[in-house]
Image (cartoon, rainbow, N blue to C red):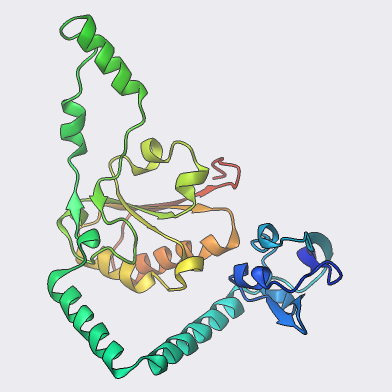
Length: 271
């Protein structure tokens, strides 16, 4: 098939290796001191490697190339993670292992302060805002100023899927928003249009390198969830988040209203 793929000019390549580090898919290797695209089916054509090249050796080109194979990329990342973890454990001294075990036990008993769940009473905050015209010019000005100022619509903490508990009070009767990390940066009105009135769960399967479906299944199955909205980017890697959510909905055994909204890279709603 003809598609967009990266091209590496070996004459310009200085062998720094930054592009290989930046390529999360593992399409680039260092061969004889030069960067080479060794797995064309691992290149998604989005060019994470481009900004990291100090010599401008990497460009895009349109040519015959195998299709991007997301499944093969995920399997390669999984194997690499297993090998990396095994290597790290092997390198640990006995003392380091003991310290790590003590830290894990402490975390299990105490919990990380940054991941302890909290609920925010946004309704109470809104009711405390001065109403425009209710008590003179000062109140009117204060109310108008507040209404013009963007406010957070995050209703709970934490919000990362990896950190969220599978059972918590804020899930009961909740409308869930399962959103890709990038959506909040790409879509300007994310808080008002999507997060308001919902419990927000965010993640990136490409960077987290995990399958969220098992945890999302537990959340949906074990709590009285009213609905699910999935907000993703148009890029292929966001398909992993959508598939995980859809799998969780099926595996939960519940019939819950759900929908998918896709955001373009330039910040528009596509569907």
